[in-house]
Length: 304
Image (tube, rainbow, N blue to C red; front, top):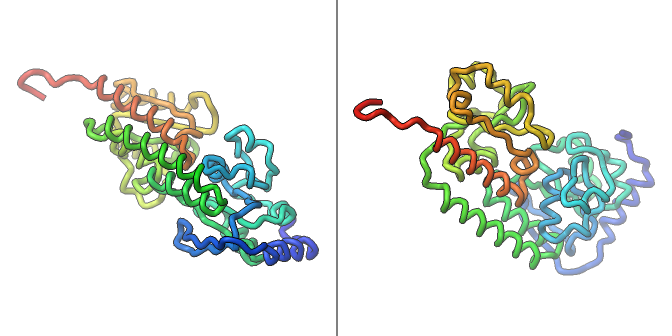
């Protein structure tokens, strides 16, 4: 990737930003507390994360996206949009040639240095960083506002909140299940209590055994999992099939999750993306934890 963009391209993109036509000004705060000001609703948006692309489509702004990063594969229309690198290796020159009037970035995923270069050109950058299920609905509404598609976004956010409330009513009061969510194998990784996935765990009546770790997605050791002895393990990965490393936990027959056959897989796109589809993943997780409750051995009469 050429990090030194030609001066002609720099001038063109800067001119495009300066020459935005007057209209209904938009003033909005992004997810890291920065004030974003647009002269009018964004018409040429570059999305720098797959989940952002999906959120924009949910907000009714899919036809305003001119650039996306790798793995922006939902909905199908997203696969036809020009690629501008990957979320962690942004192609600045490709973005510049698209003359965007807004960048929607992923605060914890995109390289800060790349975003600084884009902002230096005068392109507004809106940071998206949902940390709870409620934030997903808020993100849809915010993106609808900056794209001028409020009606579609509001309806999508309302439908999400209604489904969220239904799942909370069905599973929120259930007996706790101590569980380990495995986000990756090598290195072995999980999530802490501040991660969006932990909000899914709470919704389903689960208890994240690594909730108190300081990092959002910390690396851990096998010994830590064995010491925590979770009753259930829910794992994800990169593809649609059950990862082989989930079955590796069967090497430890004394592990509670293994003894009760509570080793579960959920597709990463349904739980590791901060989008409305996360409730599809949540419904699966809730079902898994219900299965774990059903498999509990009843205590013998008069004893433990």
